[in-house]
Image (cartoon, rainbow, N blue to C red; front, side, top):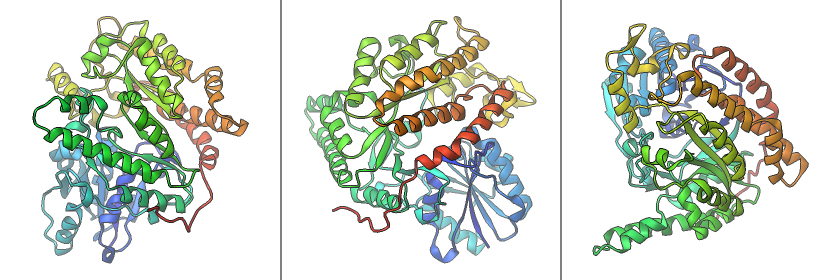
Length: 499
């Protein structure tokens, strides 16, 4: 009898940038008396289905873009006699699909931290229920991940979570609907203990994989202060105090730590927070810039962002505090035109971003954008599958999902997207951005990492061009192994959790 956890992927690179955290969290939620779970991350190597058999249990976590592969694994596992369990955000949104397409015996929705051991107990008794509702678990009940199971040398970065939930309501994001808008803060010492455990193993690059590392803004507090009822103000100030307590504790960790996160642009207006982040070894992260026009920001409910000169100034403030920004941009908004692509690449370079990603507007389930888009394609099918369930189609058969734009054709969008990736990641522009590094070997690392990132992610949204995607995967495999070695550090087995 074995318990397997599978992170499905159509593409295996032999190595991966970020450790798939949920695999190790559910391993931590698995009672020790049931043995050591077998972890399979298919972004590294695909599962050997022939090893499965009766008496095994296979847990498969899916999001929208890997659901189709997950269903393939589920059907194969069930055919071998294993019990099949689906979970993850997509299974939470579409539980019946896991039964119909993936051969599921049961589906776990929401957070699995507490409900997973309950499900395992039922499985042992032969009383497996059809569904288990995990809901939203409070932060002090989050399961501790089994980082002792992390394979050596296969991931460049670890992954630690400090908060679940995001108070924003961006139209293209499902987090505020699935994880809620109330921040659930992990206790500071719990976060530090996880980071120390990873650093002991020789991992010094760690992603703080939060929905929003800046859950309370100065503007939020200012608005709450004007209310006659102080309840909200007290809550927000308590959250802010907890964040600073976390940052203070992280500042006591080794100086060679490089922590990265995801944060909103409003943090640029909070120099005290940025300074505390720098002391806490937080060196960079992703910021959703999305678009460079006011009309575009309004269309996606992200008016708290900036444009033009103010946008450049805000982004440079992060750089001034030693925070290297990975800027994320979306193409395909109704306000985009032919000039959008070049202007975006130019702004990204002018704003002193460390890196950028460019994606086509995609309506993901659970978002406001998906709710709108689904109505526009009602009744349309491809190979008998509704277009509104595009993730069930092979990648090369998926249509362009970007909503209609009177200024840009589908082909113009795809060409513009690739042109922007090519322009921004040209050797000249990458070399120019690498000047932020102080030593020549650091510049080499920066260039290699930039090229690897481009090869792994530039194919996003180009479902029709399988040849280009295949070439990108080949280059990524070639670059990944030497690049991985550059992100490894000497283990610190005796490192202690700071008080």
